[in-house]
Amino acid sequence: MLSIHNLIVDSSRDKLVRGISLELQAGGWLALAGESGSGKSLTAASIGGLLSKELKQSGIISWQGTDLADLSPSRKRQFLGKEISYIFQDYQGAFTPFMTIGKQLDEQLLTHTALNRTQRRVLSIEALVNVSLSGERVYGSYPSELSGGQLQRAAIASALILNPALMIADEPTTALDSLTAHKVLTYISKARARRDMSVLWITHDLRHVRRYADHVAIMLKGEIVEQGAVDQVLNAPAHSYTQQLIAAIPPLSPHVPRRLGLPEGVHET
Image (cartoon, rainbow, N blue to C red; front, side, top):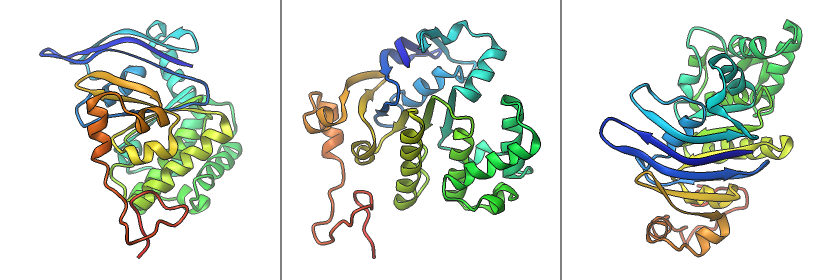
């Protein structure tokens, strides 16, 4: 579905992404993991042409055989809304503060579909309900009236509403507590199974990688140092950096049993 070949991202001072190559299969979940500053988010932004003007990218990024660099700006905007969607760490930035959530979902559907107003409202409320939000209430709410976890779920609803074939989730749970993060990733996982959607997930948390992803690529200083199936990489890491990341994962407390359904490292009190 998605192929990245020899991607390079340059600033005026340095190569920030150094010739990486990745592939993501239809329906697959690929985690791109590593420490802050390793180039993960730059890689994700490169796919949609979302890099700042100060940065230059080269290499080939193709989607279902189409080189994304060949798309016109207008075609790329349509493409990003419908085929490929993003969830960012700054989920609050996904919404305009002076418009209701419903109005913003409606404008998204108005841009990309031929649905009438009633159909758009029904679909918007359904999308909110699918991420366990109160559809009618959240539809009529402003972003400031929702909690962080609710806003994040609304951002997921917005990203899923057009049934994208690929969701790019860039550190979507970093600002959330562990239980809310677990719920957010569960919503994405269910949507992936229901729609046969592919997921490219930018993260630094290998505990969640083991639980949700199929494949993982480890980045360090702009390079991919190891990649493969999650079980292979995390159970038998070949690179010393991967070994260090795994060794740094906090162990579960031996005194508190983990109940089924809670993420690793989270315990009920």
